[in-house]
Image (cartoon, rainbow, N blue to C red; front, side):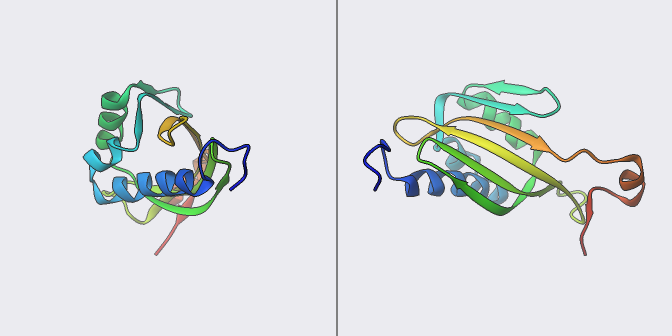
Length: 132
């Protein structure tokens, strides 16, 4: 363990990884247990949610399924890249990157997500990635 880090980096990695696993499983109570009480969620479209209950409700209403491609960072900040899809269109995938800040006890205190813009041509073909 790096003495300058307030808790082991593996805790941050586990919490961020588990957040996506719980969202994919639709286990919103378990997801909420990883969030700081004053958590903030921001999306690249400008939408935001503040507080554990609001962030959990926002994720529940969006119902994305996530595939993590890469995850790295420190005990206090993690970055995730991957793809996300909606259950009603599982073949259409959009690239995303998310930046997490973690509280002093390892809970997720903020997440800012960016998605790859989809051009008109890509939209006509069904999205940024078309997977079979």
